[in-house]
Length: 243
Image 1 (cartoon, rainbow, N blue to C red):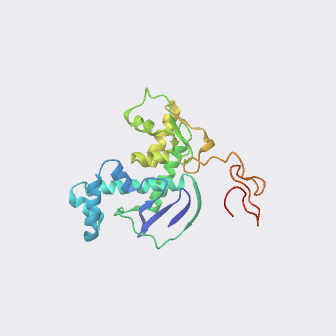
Image 2: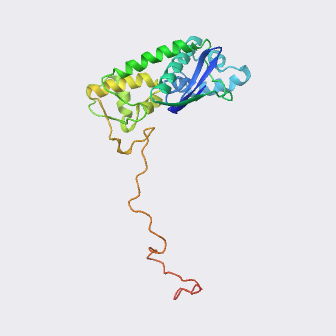
Image 3: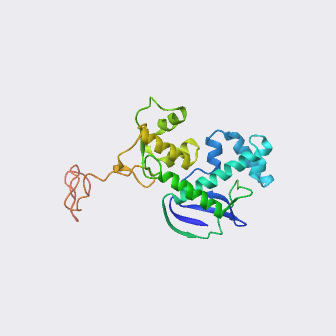
């Protein structure tokens, strides 16, 4: 099932359970495993190659001994919960079935029931609503302020909070879930470690908009380049040697 909105996402369903969620609003299991350092880049690439013959990336990773099956399942379930939060935390426009979508690379084998997922996500949304400072994970750009009292985990966030990144951007950069990063950012805003940057140049995804042109384009015929002479139809350009 595909959900259109901000950020939107794709829910992979199997036998009535959600086995995967892909959303541009939150890091998927691949990002969580690789950027967090759980799996090294060369091991991931080698496992992808092996998975073609084994027909299972899960089995290829476990077979290389780089990660256990139980940890993969925990990460897969965590990515489902975080992806669902990312889909519903902002705007939802419409939902529709998409039977052409590819299966997820690392699905949660047992999946999570729809009712349980809805209940858990409702709890996450209520928790975010009660945070010390309201923050939009997709719109509010963050800038670090006082770094003296920051913990090691907060330092990682503050090092990336340059005024151009949102909570969503931080989550992808750190290889952490959108929900825990949003919660930590709210707490840091409440203690003064972070501030929300001026919204003048922020966009839907926290990217800088192009500045408007200072001068509008002038009408053709009223403004000509001063360095070139004006040629009239049927006339040669004088003193130019060009007919």
